Each structure stands twice: as structure tokens, then as C-alpha cells.
Image (cartoon, rainbow, N blue to C red; front, side, top):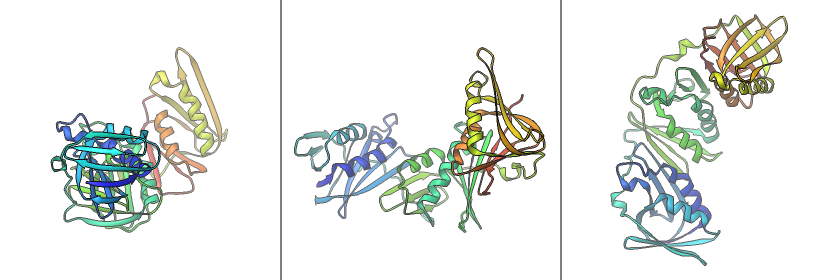
Amino acid sequence: MKLQVTQENLNRALNAVARVASSRGTLPILANVALKTSQNRLSVAATNLDVAITCFIGAKISQEGATTVPARLTQDFIASLPSGVIDLKLDGTKLNIKTDQYESTINSVSADDFPVMPKVSGSKTFELPVDKLKGAFGQVVGAAGSDETRPVLTGIYLAGGDKLVIAATDSYRLAEKTLAEKIKLTPIIIPSSAVSELLRVLPDAGKITVNYSDQQISFSTDFIELTARLIDGNYPPYQNLIPTKFTTKAIVARADLLNITKVSSLFARESAGSITINVDDEAGNISVHSIASQLGENTASATAEATGSGSITLNSRYLLDALGAMSDAKDIFFGFNGKLEAVVVRNNDASDFTYVIMPLKS
């Protein structure tokens, strides 16, 4: 293998894939990245057996070949080099890396030993604008669970039909996004860790092709491909748990609700983020109250268009996450039915994203 690449392109590719490489696995080679030449491009790949990422960059290839090198060392070394052209040459089990001012040798391992995620066989395909899928995943991924004893809740739910539904829940809160895309998609569950990696490496524009089967899914653009194993299981039928009618509701400016929640959360650290939200239709406001037994207490309010009066206790972090996922909203709808039922938070001017938060016992 002998080729030339630019430092900028190789550094970008290594940054995209190297984080997936794992030094804690049972296979030492999983700590490596695979380099392979093909048709005037260099592919840079890494996998942890659950997720695999491949990045393709342009290269001037003199001799085809493939090898693997330690991910962390190679990433840090290439990042330290100045901009310009890098010469790569494989000599036996050593990869020579040379620029005008630097020359190094990194010990490599044969690419024959590198595990390759199988291609998504018998797959079904659909295509979406990158910004739509990236935006939707970004809104819901934070609501996914992390408890490995309930693997289904650690995933992102996708289902198609007249619209594409993307949802995540950890059983304490739920985020659901719908896209006006008619896609035939039987329900699947993607690991949230794979979605987080996808969000990290995707560009902001262009098209993305999605291939899926019963066991795997892949996301491909011109320069990035991510493949992941799907989570086996049935997602909970959450749709009927989302309230549609409310005895207490308020419409409030997102910036105002965000500010009063942030301030109150400072006093809620001792109580696991517990804040009490009160909607008052007579006063025409929504207020957030929190207590820190050793430090004091706080009440902050904002003008709101309120219907009905009532209070409910929530985890401040969940509400802040909900408001953060709706950064493009001007006004927020906030509705609930009594202290023990779920709260619905959504953009008052759009119905394509819903955030549901279960209350805390007050």
C-alpha cells in the first residue's frame, strides 16, 4: 500500500471513526482503525462489533493495499501534523508516515484479522435529507434510557406509514418526533449509542440512504457509512399514554420558561432536581418553585396564557431537556391533568414534536 492524502482529510476521517474503536474489548484489534485503498479513495474504518463507521476520503494511490493501526496513537499523531500532504507506505507490518518535516513508523496488524460488520442483507431502503433525519434524531436521543437490563428502552424507535415516527423513552420521559415522509417501515429499534455516533459524524446537508433488515441498519452518505445491530424486542405501546386533553394548560414564551426553570434548578440540586410548577389562570402566569434545605428557596414566574389552575412536581433536568430540544420554538404549550398524570410539553406552533414528562411525588 502506497498513497498520498492531505492531513486535513485524514485527520477528519480519524476523528470521525476512531472513537468507536475499543481498547476494552476481548479482541485487541478492535483498538485499531482499518485503512484500505479502493478506486482513488482511502477508507478509514473502526468497529466495536455493535457499531461500525467507515469514512471515505480522496487519495492519490500508487499501490493498493490494506492494514490496521492503533486508533488512538494514529489519531493523535495525525492531528499533531501541520497541514499539507502526507505520504503513507506499508512496508511489511510497518506503516511509514512521512511529511516534509516528519517521518514516523507505526506498527500495524494485518487487515485480514479485522472484523467486518456484515452487509445489511435482504435490506429495505429509503432516503431522506440529512438535515431532517439529523434534526429528528437530535431531538429525541436524549430521552433514551441507559439501563442495560431494559435494552429496548436504550434504543430509538422508528416506524413508518403516512409519516415517519421517531421516539425514545426511559419510562420517566418520552420524546416523539414525526416527519411528513411516507415511508414503508416496519417498527425497528436502533441503539441510542449508534444514533449518538451518527449525529456526531453526519454532515449538515445532503441526502442520506438508510438500509435496514431484521437485524441491522446502515446509514450512508457520499463520505460516511455507519452500520449498527438493531435491538431485538417490542417497543412499549406508548402512544395511548400521551394525554390529548388537559384540565390545566399554559402557553408561555420558551425563553421565559427556560430562564425561570434554569434559575429554580439551582436550588433543586439537593432534591434530585425536584421543582414545583404552578399554573394560575387568575394571575395569568406560570411559576417554578424549588427548595434547598441548607441554602434557601426560590420562586420565579413568567407571564402565560393560562387555562385552569394547578401545580405539579417535575425533575428540572427533564424539563430543561425538553426545552432544549425545541430551540426553534417561540411559544411553549405546557399541559397536565392533576399532580399524578403526565405533563405534555410541545412547540405551540407545531405538532410534530411532543415531550412527555412523568411527575415526581410531591
